[in-house]
Image (cartoon, rainbow, N blue to C red; front, side, top):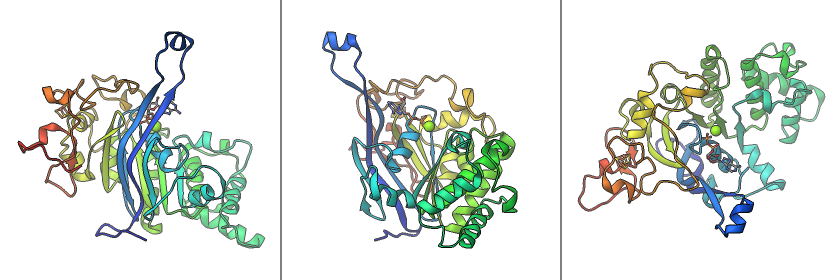
Length: 351
Ligand SMILES: Nc1ncnc2c1ncn2[C@@H]1O[C@H](COP(=O)(O)OP(=O)(O)O)[C@@H](O)[C@H]1O
Ligand code: SF4
Ligand SMILES: [Mg+2]
């Protein structure tokens, strides 16, 4: 059953999503009887992907974004929480049910070179995807037609120019287009795009983002767009969620979150992006992390608000109490998990 509202039907939904990775105990830990520890990579994350909408998940590197994508893709098992596809809880690993899920929810990775096999041609990659997902038709002509249609979807035309090429014979942008075409071979409803442009040359990023936006509209896809570049979220996403050290700290429609950021961490992210109209940041290194910044340990995460060690507005309660989601009221669904927005003496929040 589809839950509907004005923004379109919900495709994929997570609630209370949590992932703790166990840390292997060293011989010294064993000798001293130190208790097993874990990396608290994702904590109590809620997220909704709707048909025909792009949701951006923004945060510096190490904040847990890829782990969220992998949990949604059922690649990692979760510590707790739920993932629902059209309202039905899904918890699958491998096997037929996993393949049925992957057909509807596809991952796109940051590095198209690593995700395509260098010894196989474009034709091989796309044929395999079409066949696995039963979209190759029954005749050779059906298959040729499906291959051409896939390449046309990602604007690689004429198809004959690309089908027999190997990944190294393509540019970075063309490779990412092939990786997207391969994902489309499953005829999915949701795409989880994990930093899909951050390894690409600045000059071709916009083309790939425009392609994803075009696919969202033409195929009515629900897209999760993961990025460390908040400026690109404004340009490209309908809704933006900001993640810090494993927790969601702010969310709302992209225009409001990027133009009127409420959470001090979002403000820091925006201040460290020098040109708000630019849609791209340097792929890694300084651009992926704001100034004054060492992310906190996720093995022993800060108490209360996880941002309190870096926050210019820190108050005594911040180190002690976890802030709930407070509504900001200046834009559709805008909220922030920050005690600055606690206007009531009775501490109520919209969790
Ligand atoms: N397989 C894993 N085992 C242990 N720790 C992991 C694993 N994957 C990610 N982590 C840790 O989880 C945290 C979040 O990582 P990740 O989700 O990759 O963040 P991001 O994508 O935002 O850079 C990091 O501290 C990272 O080291
Ligand atoms: S809750 Fe406190 S420490 Fe956290 S962002 Fe708000 S003011 Fe800063
Ligand atoms: Mg990542």
